[in-house]
Length: 313
Ligand code: SF4
Image (cartoon, rainbow, N blue to C red; front, side, top):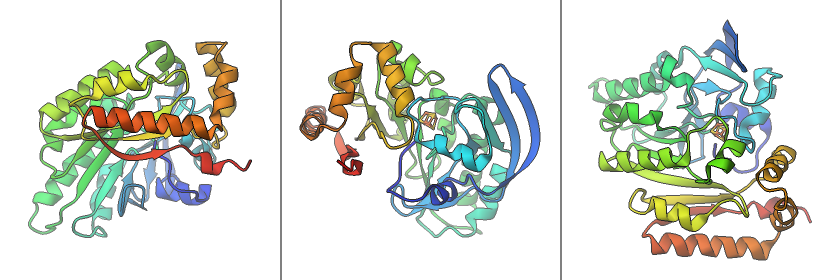
C-alpha cells in the first residue's frame, strides 16, 4: 500500500473504506485464512493520495501478508484479531456500489485501486470484484447518460492484473504499477510471503507496456542491505515510465517483525540495518543513487520518501 500524509487512523480508515460496512456471511476458516463476505456502504472514498480523486479497495485485509504492511492497523476497524494476512473481508456488493457512488464523481476525476489492500490478491480470482468494478467503469463511461471521464491507477504485486487487460485498454488513461523491492526470492518469501515473485511482476509490466497500457513501479520498501537498486532498475528499463521510491516506514508498529525477518535473511545484517535506519547521510546517498539509476535508465522519478522527518531525535 501507499502511505498518506500524517493523519489519524480513523481518517485513514475512512479514506480506504474500512469503516463503513456491515457483516453478511462468514465463509469460515480454511488453512490459515479467515474469509468473511460483507456489505459495504461505499466503494469510492475521497482521497488525495494520488492527486484529487478516490480510492477503491474491494477487500479489507490482504493475503500477501507483507511483514512491513502499513495497513495492518486497520484490523481495529474491521474487528479482527487474527494476524495481518490471515483474514480477508470481501466487499461483496462492490460493483453495485460503484454505480451508486459514481454519481458523485466529477468529470475528469479518477480512482486509485489498491491503496490499502492489494486488489489482485488470490481471492480476486474467485470473487472478481476488481474485474467487475472495471467492467462498470467501462460501461458507465460509454453510456451517453453519464458522459464522464474517469480513469484508474492500480498498484499491485500480482500478475493476475493481466486478466483484465481487455478492460484496462478501454479505460482512457488507465495505468498499472507494481511494487518491486526484492528480486531476491529468499527475501521476498520472508518479507512478502503471499505475493508473487518479483520476476513475474516485471514480466507483467513488460506485457502491459506491450499492450499499450501505462506502467509505473513503486520501489518500496527499500531495505538496506537487501534491496538491490541497480538490479531493479536494470529490470525496469523500458518497462515503466516513472517510479516512486520509499524507505521502510518504521512508524507503523511493524518494526519488531521487520527486524525478525532481517535477522532470518542474514543474522549479521541486523545491527547495520538498525544503525542506518535513521542515518541521514546514508539515505541521502540512497536517494542520489536512486535518482542516478533512474536517469541512466530513462525513467522519471515521481517521488522519493525517506520518512526521516518522522524521527523525533
Ligand atoms: S500487498 Fe503487502 S503491503 Fe500491499 S496491502 Fe497487501 S500486505 Fe499490505
